[in-house]
Length: 154
Image (cartoon, rainbow, N blue to C red; front, side, top):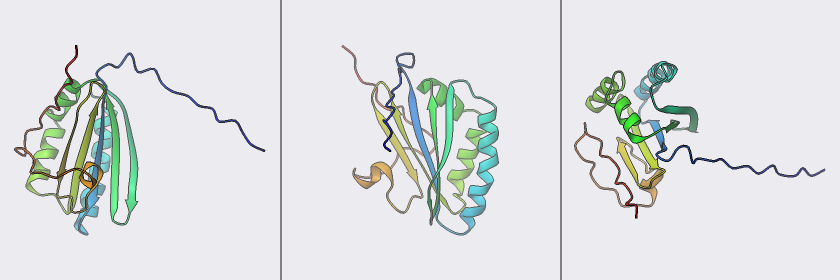
Protein backbone atom coordinates (compact mmCIF):
# COMPACT_ATOMS: atom_id res chain seq x y z
CA UNK A 1 0.00 0.00 0.00
CA UNK A 2 1.49 3.31 -1.04
CA UNK A 3 1.24 6.40 1.10
CA UNK A 4 0.85 9.90 -0.28
CA UNK A 5 3.86 12.11 0.45
CA UNK A 6 3.08 14.98 2.81
CA UNK A 7 5.11 17.83 1.25
CA UNK A 8 5.59 20.93 3.38
CA UNK A 9 7.70 24.07 3.35
CA UNK A 10 8.35 26.92 5.77
CA UNK A 11 7.68 30.65 5.73
CA UNK A 12 10.96 32.35 6.60
CA UNK A 13 9.69 35.88 5.99
CA UNK A 14 10.01 36.65 9.73
CA UNK A 15 13.72 35.81 9.52
CA UNK A 16 15.12 38.14 6.83
CA UNK A 17 18.63 38.01 8.35
CA UNK A 18 18.69 34.28 9.13
CA UNK A 19 22.13 32.69 9.38
CA UNK A 20 22.73 28.95 9.16
CA UNK A 21 26.10 27.66 10.29
CA UNK A 22 27.40 24.12 10.00
CA UNK A 23 30.28 23.21 12.31
CA UNK A 24 32.34 20.03 12.30
CA UNK A 25 35.07 18.45 14.39
CA UNK A 26 37.02 15.56 12.92
CA UNK A 27 39.30 13.31 14.94
CA UNK A 28 42.73 13.30 13.25
CA UNK A 29 44.69 11.47 15.96
CA UNK A 30 43.72 9.20 18.85
CA UNK A 31 44.06 12.09 21.32
CA UNK A 32 41.30 13.82 19.35
CA UNK A 33 38.71 11.43 20.83
CA UNK A 34 39.31 12.99 24.25
CA UNK A 35 39.14 16.50 22.79
CA UNK A 36 35.86 15.78 20.99
CA UNK A 37 34.31 14.08 24.04
CA UNK A 38 35.29 17.06 26.19
CA UNK A 39 33.50 19.51 23.91
CA UNK A 40 30.14 17.70 24.08
CA UNK A 41 29.09 18.80 27.58
CA UNK A 42 30.47 22.31 27.07
CA UNK A 43 28.50 22.75 23.85
CA UNK A 44 25.35 21.39 25.53
CA UNK A 45 25.75 23.82 28.42
CA UNK A 46 26.25 26.77 26.09
CA UNK A 47 23.12 25.86 24.11
CA UNK A 48 21.11 25.36 27.33
CA UNK A 49 22.13 28.91 28.32
CA UNK A 50 20.08 30.07 25.28
CA UNK A 51 22.35 32.74 23.83
CA UNK A 52 20.46 35.69 22.39
CA UNK A 53 19.65 35.04 18.75
CA UNK A 54 20.19 31.26 18.70
CA UNK A 55 17.00 29.84 17.22
CA UNK A 56 17.95 26.16 17.00
CA UNK A 57 20.93 23.87 17.59
CA UNK A 58 21.14 20.32 16.21
CA UNK A 59 23.89 17.70 16.57
CA UNK A 60 24.67 14.99 14.05
CA UNK A 61 27.40 12.57 12.99
CA UNK A 62 29.15 12.80 9.63
CA UNK A 63 31.09 9.54 10.02
CA UNK A 64 32.22 6.95 12.55
CA UNK A 65 35.64 6.42 10.96
CA UNK A 66 37.25 8.75 11.14
CA UNK A 67 35.02 10.14 13.88
CA UNK A 68 33.56 13.36 12.48
CA UNK A 69 30.82 15.06 14.50
CA UNK A 70 28.79 18.05 13.44
CA UNK A 71 26.34 20.72 14.52
CA UNK A 72 23.93 22.93 12.66
CA UNK A 73 22.81 26.18 14.21
CA UNK A 74 20.21 28.70 13.10
CA UNK A 75 20.81 32.29 14.26
CA UNK A 76 18.49 35.29 14.01
CA UNK A 77 21.26 37.37 12.41
CA UNK A 78 25.03 37.76 12.08
CA UNK A 79 25.18 40.30 14.90
CA UNK A 80 23.81 37.68 17.33
CA UNK A 81 26.22 35.04 16.08
CA UNK A 82 29.21 37.38 16.28
CA UNK A 83 28.22 38.58 19.75
CA UNK A 84 28.20 34.98 20.96
CA UNK A 85 31.52 34.11 19.30
CA UNK A 86 33.17 37.07 21.03
CA UNK A 87 31.82 36.19 24.48
CA UNK A 88 32.67 33.54 27.07
CA UNK A 89 32.88 30.61 26.78
CA UNK A 90 33.34 30.62 22.99
CA UNK A 91 36.21 33.09 22.94
CA UNK A 92 38.31 30.95 25.31
CA UNK A 93 37.49 27.71 23.45
CA UNK A 94 38.54 29.20 20.15
CA UNK A 95 41.73 30.77 21.51
CA UNK A 96 42.75 27.46 23.13
CA UNK A 97 41.92 25.47 20.01
CA UNK A 98 44.10 27.70 17.84
CA UNK A 99 47.02 27.09 20.23
CA UNK A 100 46.49 23.30 20.17
CA UNK A 101 43.85 21.48 18.15
CA UNK A 102 44.07 18.46 20.49
CA UNK A 103 44.29 15.93 17.67
CA UNK A 104 41.21 17.25 15.88
CA UNK A 105 40.34 19.37 12.89
CA UNK A 106 37.57 21.94 13.10
CA UNK A 107 35.63 23.71 10.37
CA UNK A 108 32.54 25.81 9.85
CA UNK A 109 30.52 26.97 6.87
CA UNK A 110 28.13 29.91 7.18
CA UNK A 111 25.16 30.64 4.90
CA UNK A 112 23.20 33.89 5.01
CA UNK A 113 19.58 34.42 3.98
CA UNK A 114 20.59 37.78 2.49
CA UNK A 115 23.31 36.14 0.44
CA UNK A 116 26.93 35.39 1.02
CA UNK A 117 28.79 32.42 2.41
CA UNK A 118 32.10 31.93 4.20
CA UNK A 119 34.09 29.07 5.63
CA UNK A 120 37.13 28.33 7.79
CA UNK A 121 38.93 24.97 8.01
CA UNK A 122 41.58 24.43 10.73
CA UNK A 123 43.66 21.25 10.73
CA UNK A 124 41.26 19.55 8.31
CA UNK A 125 43.41 17.06 6.36
CA UNK A 126 40.70 15.72 4.03
CA UNK A 127 38.50 18.12 2.05
CA UNK A 128 34.95 18.66 3.34
CA UNK A 129 32.17 20.95 2.13
CA UNK A 130 33.32 23.82 -0.07
CA UNK A 131 36.89 22.44 0.01
CA UNK A 132 35.77 19.56 -2.19
CA UNK A 133 35.05 21.78 -5.19
CA UNK A 134 36.37 25.31 -4.61
CA UNK A 135 40.01 26.50 -4.56
CA UNK A 136 41.48 26.47 -1.03
CA UNK A 137 43.42 29.56 0.10
CA UNK A 138 45.05 30.61 3.40
CA UNK A 139 42.54 31.94 5.95
CA UNK A 140 42.80 35.48 7.33
CA UNK A 141 44.32 36.19 10.74
CA UNK A 142 43.42 33.34 13.13
CA UNK A 143 41.52 35.33 15.77
CA UNK A 144 39.40 37.37 13.37
CA UNK A 145 36.36 36.12 11.50
CA UNK A 146 35.38 38.25 8.58
CA UNK A 147 31.79 39.10 7.94
CA UNK A 148 30.62 37.45 4.75
CA UNK A 149 29.91 40.05 2.07
CA UNK A 150 26.36 41.39 2.09
CA UNK A 151 24.40 41.22 -1.10
CA UNK A 152 23.59 44.65 -2.46
CA UNK A 153 19.89 45.43 -2.68
CA UNK A 154 18.36 47.71 -5.30
